[in-house]
Image (cartoon, rainbow, N blue to C red; front, side, top):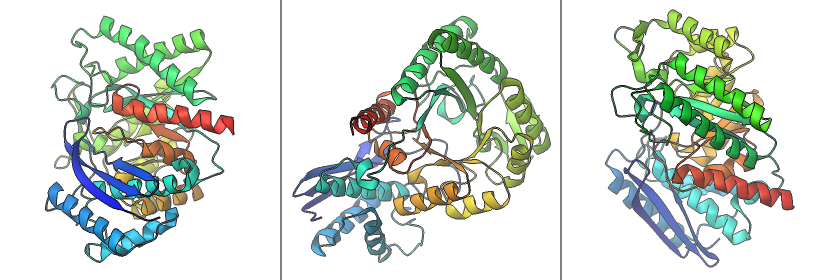
Length: 409
């Protein structure tokens, strides 16, 4: 692949924050990609941008782009990204791309992959895996709180997630929309403090206690099953690190209110799972508590206990989680480490150890839909990418297009 032109610029994400987009020109046309960024970020994620700021990251990217052009570095397949990373390491000696930043690296590598796919005249998912046939199952954020909401009266829990059991991705998308509408009616009736405010991810920013919200979701699941014949499963992203007090070693719930030590948190979460039949719980403990994750997994073997801040799309942390039997599912966020090569290593290691993978958007999103193509190409069984919002719909619409492409083969 011959690169004829390269540019990197600042763009705004869905939170109106600055992020990076990369543009590449080849004889076959133009390709681009943009990086997301998270509001709730674990301490084990690499820097989003260079420690010297986003402007330095952009200058760094332009230097790499010039080298790719001047040195005529040939890129034909996914594994060739190693040549790009080797080039970056000539300047970034951190060993973890901290000098460039995870967002910058993700935007660069995603744009390069798109350009390679364009050169071959195929879709990105097919370029990465011509034999791909499976679509991921949708996880949609319906009610939200935590770091995704600015108002003081809000849910302590960051995300209440819906996931319809369907054969086709379109049906999954449609069921989540219908469930969202039904849930909105119930919230307007039951939550007098809610005036229609939405979170960063366009979930409903209800102020109801956790148990009350779960009861409403259970009622909605019954409506959906009766009306459409599909089972609607649901779960939580607790993002427990965001309300963990490191000094007192307690989880501080403001909505309830109450304070729980790790043992009481374990009892509380396991009871929530059993009483409300939650199929999915993400980050129920703070990001260093592998032991409590392990105890919960042992108590609730038939449910997904998911690591995000715990594992941070980091292979070493995933290996520790596997060794300690802390999780049976992991969130995959490419910009947590930037490198798509390293992200693929995490996915492959998870699969080898029977850890369910869930590729995920970020709260500060763009209309880039690379993660949709990666989900299909890498055979990732779940995608967490919202229900409403332009940036979320970009991924959902992309998956529906891919589904039609696969069915037409």
